[in-house]
Each structure stands twice: as C-alpha cells, then as structure tokens.
Image (tube, rainbow, N blue to C red; front, side, top):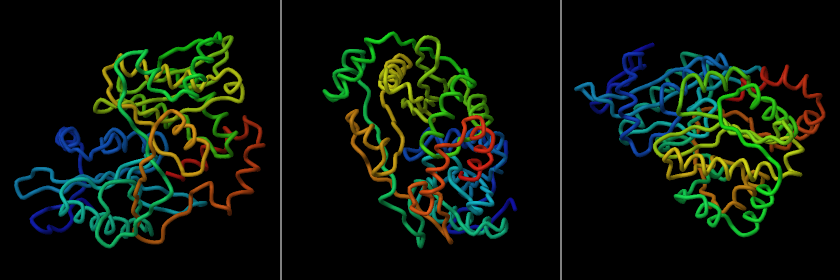
Length: 345
C-alpha cells in the first residue's frame, strides 16, 4: 500500500528511494528530528536484522514534506508482532506539524492492520491523539560538552572524576576505528553478563556501512585484550554512544570510565557540542552510572496503539530467564542470542 487518504490538506504515503534527499533535508531542519528518522537507520535495521522497514511521509498539496514516521515491522514468536518507530532505536516517532503527526499515526494504524500487526509503538515524537502514553520506564541523559580536555574532566562530579583519574593511571590502551569483530567480542560478553541476548553482528556492520564516517568505535584494551568498547553515532553536533559495554575485567581497571572520557575528548575533536548518553531504565545500574557522570535524567514518553508488547527484561516474569541467561556459555549465547534479540526491535 503506497498511498493513503488525504486529511486536512495533507497526503500520507509510503516513501520511496527518490524521497531520500527531501527526507534528509527535513530531518536537518526539524528540531524534533533524531538520528532514527534518517532513512539510513531503517535500511540498516532491515539489512542487519531482516525486519522490513516502512517509511511514511505526510506532504502538503504542493508536495512539500510536513511530517515523517519511520517504522520497522518487527516479527517475533516470543514477543509478538509490532510496527515500531524506530526499530532498534531509543527514539523515533512521528515528527512534524500536529496535523501531520495525527495523519501519520492514522496511516500507521492502517498499515499495521494490513500487515496483521496488533501493536504500533512510537518511541518519541508527539503523542498522537487517542494513543496510550507510556511513562516512568525510561529516562534520557544528555548535556553540553566542554571544549577542551581539562574542562571535560572538571565537569565530571568529584567521585566519578577520581575514578577517571584512576583509569588514566593504569596501563590501558585506547583505539578509535571501525573494528566490528573487536567490538562485538566485548559487547556480546557484556550483555550476556546482564542476562540479555545480544543483537546480531550484522546489525552493527550494517549500521557502520550505512552511516559511514558518522559512526565509529572506541575500544579500551589491557595487555592487548579488549575490555571495553562502544559504537557511537554523530548527528547534528551530538555524539551518541549507542552500543557499549565492558567485560568483567573492565571493572578492575576502570576501563568503562576511560572509555567514555576518551569518547568525550574524541567527540570534541570532531566538533561535537553535546554528549547524548542515551536512555536507561529507572532503577538500573546504567541509570546510576550516567547520573554519577553528572547527567540529569529527563523522563521519556512513548506511545502505543493496540495491545502492546512486553519486552522489558526488568518485568518479574522474565526474572528466571535473565538469571539463567547469565550462566549460558558465551559461545552458545552468541549463537542463539541474535535469533531472540532480532525480535525485540
């Protein structure tokens, strides 16, 4: 289905490849646009996880874009089916004028019905009229970046700054490149230790290919062994450390502290003025870690149409599965984890 109905002078339709230039221009100028609204994101999700992408646009009678809504068609035997904006993103949702947001939301519901998806999830953007608001689950963390190394260090709260200084005193090596294999080795172990399945390696590879020099990897090693690593994106003057983690050994050497300090320094050299630490669930270690760095949590509001899915690993019904997964041998977790994680979206 390519064309939908025209409402309030706006036509909603599925985007095509020839729309990419206009979409990117709209994302560049729209203050609510995020990395996840770029067509590169949806295509990388489709290429890396096999979850089909759908991109809806709302346009005026003259053909000018008035709103955008990227969607990923997530299919999972464990978690059900849903249209998600944005798939594997911490943000997304419909952006544009109020009329455009509501028109896109209606189009998404129609599309979901044709695809037999009982749920539409929007991770950000304005809340469409009549949709259920989801709050008190996630908070976002972002703040301005100082302009030099000393100022970056000084802006870190005293206790956390002491941990960074300890890390600087150890014999740790840092590299900045696009080595997926090295990053995946660390990241996969990190999420297994947290009790969650790892995303497919192909997702990370497709993201690096899609975003080119707007993405890279910082890795911290000790005696040649990678112990902490993060894949980051660069968008509108912000750095977004997105998929990161550390091995058990990372704690002893404060490698995670060095990892993010070095990323801040690197981002400033790239011209970034904001450090977007992403989202974390309330009550988690990641939430506390980001607060310790001096970031103020900002509540995030999502919206859902339909039945909704339960994918939160903190839900008590997943407690046993999480505990068991932490003890799965890493080689086995890396083999079966991606088959599960690709259905989370």
